[in-house]
Image (cartoon, rainbow, N blue to C red; front, side, top):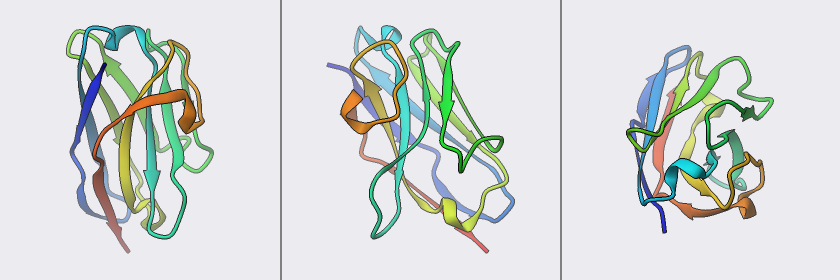
Length: 124
């Protein structure tokens, strides 16, 4: 089973940038889709971005399109989420997840390994 650990969260002012990293362990990482989700206090976990196993197909939530970029380096077993033009409403705990299959999906049930999460706080 693939395990993942997120890093890179923190406090940033509105308009700023952060890059999240997700380090994965496990032999099947490079044939699985990967996703980023987030959960704000009092809200349900929501899809942010996903990438298929080759890195050639990506998917984004409408709320982050044009501001966030997901990428992966299979040689390093790592997935990244570059976040720019951050807004206070981006404040949440961000989770990395390993897909059950190679294709990217937006629903949590399509993922079967989750990290502990990393806090992102955007101040106004």
